[in-house]
Length: 119
Image 1 (cartoon, helix red, strand yellow):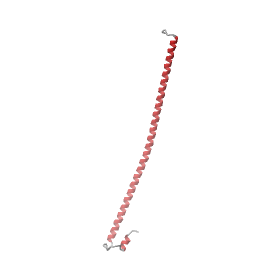
Image 2 (cartoon, helix red, strand yellow):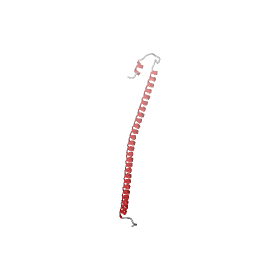
Image 3 (cartoon, rainbow, N blue to C red):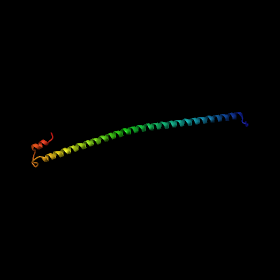
């Protein structure tokens, strides 16, 4: 050796061993932290995907219900328009029949006009 005494050499060797062990422990801690961080990020991503899928499913169901209601409204409007048209046609027919009766300028209800009234 270069003239180091035995206790100094043992101390330096022990110091080197402590530094190597400290380095290994530090590296292990960094690796564990890295694994924990990665696991947390993966869990968060999975949770986000799960909630996104649930929200998309719920939105699709709501949109389907809205579309079904819109179809029902259109059908109701079409039925109402048909009824209004039928009623106006019936009224027009009644007016024509009333005008065709004799004594159109008479006051009051005649037998023929009473027969035109709905049951």
